[in-house]
Image (tube, rainbow, N blue to C red):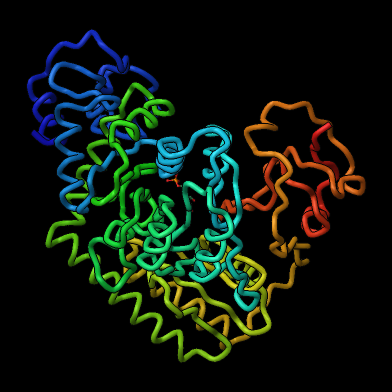
Length: 455
Ligand SMILES: Cc1ncc(COP(=O)(O)O)c(C=O)c1O
């Protein structure tokens, strides 16, 4: 039986439950909350009652739903995550890495990879992607550089990469997985932003179809599910033991599964795989492409279009920083973007992005560029980080919990950082505990007075 069917059934039976959760399917508890979320939401919230399943050791409805998803995605095994891709990345790392194992990571990774480093005790080696100064973004993985790095470091066990990048740039995962296999290195792909790819050919190619060992996808980012639903897949050809992944997930996951989240994961996957879901996705891609075609004709406006996922719309305006454009859109048009940098602005779209919403953005961009609209208020003094090769003095796990002191920034050069510093979004680490503080870090942190350093 599916999770959705089971919840429908249990609601009908109206069993008298002396179990958690105590809100008694919305009959008690804070009225403001219940009114806001709706009794219906609460009425789907059960724990491991008779007939339900155990997220830590699924054998019933959760297992069936995960197996169904595994079939749809063509994986060896698929796990439902109720704590985002973050938990999937950490669990995936933990299933592969032991203390002091070496792991190669693209520096434009999400900061959840740092959490995985603390938990596993693995030693990071950073692969610096090329930084595109015209757009203020990191680019794809350079295949030759990867091959050369793996040849130089024979004892690397795992390579972690983000695909697409936060801004939607696509790497050649097939070539990357071939190189990893050649060097006997496992491949974990953070596909948090690629959850729609299995259902439309015009987006990216899923890493699962390109030989990755572990893939994590956030269903909430682009695929229409509730925050923070996600999936962890093991590649069909991978020799990673699903039991080990389950154990790793159990280390960091609640023992109280959220059925509203689980049924939304199940329902979202099935919807995306349905004719109706695919049609909605096709319509979205059509609408975006139509909008991009129009934007390309607008003077002073540039849309990024080079090997990227079209659901991520990255634009820049001549003689205007991304921050300025972002401020104008926010202040004058009530439009909030996903992310701005010194050069460009990123608009995240997904299954729920309507034509009307795209039209509103298109109209605003056309107006800004045609009328040369500027904001008159004082401009903020934005900090710009120039990516710099990290120098790892100690592993994140080694310095975890070590004594530190706060010192003024001007004395911090060459000291070992005890702070994780990243801009959010995108959550790409700028400085990680255990790394040596360089001049570029201090330039970026100029508005911060003090920083924690290792004693
Ligand atoms: C590239 C990337 N990976 C992973 C994550 C974490 O995903 P989640 O929010 O599902 O935990 C994010 C979130 O911003 C992300 O951008």
